[in-house]
Length: 180
Image 1 (tube, rainbow, N blue to C red):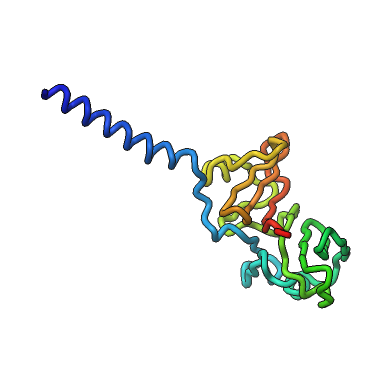
Image 2: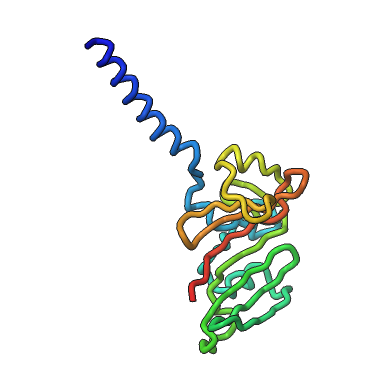
């Protein structure tokens, strides 16, 4: 009877370890606070940092980064997509085709960053080793190409890191899925 109790107890402990330990090891732990990018507002001296994220109007990016961007508009199904393409970073805003507001009022649905001037709240930048991200948050979900690692916060929001052959981050993306 004593051995039966010990066996059942050990089995229960093993099951608890597998359920709690296994789930923690396979899930990423990236917090929602990582769903944005930061940029020095004043010449890189750390005196002011601005947050750039999904949901802000495109005008917010222009207010801080200036008007040195190429603007492009596309109609896709019922959506009007507006791109502000700066050197090293692209912002995409989205509105309904019927929405005639100025492009700057379009809410941002994704940011794709290839510039070292921006970083995640944890400090990851283009050019950093992806293994640092992986050590902090796990590997993420690999996309079709194994060079892109996606961290989903829910069914619609994600951050991605595109990695080159040397294991360095070459692009950081902050995305909101567009539902039609």
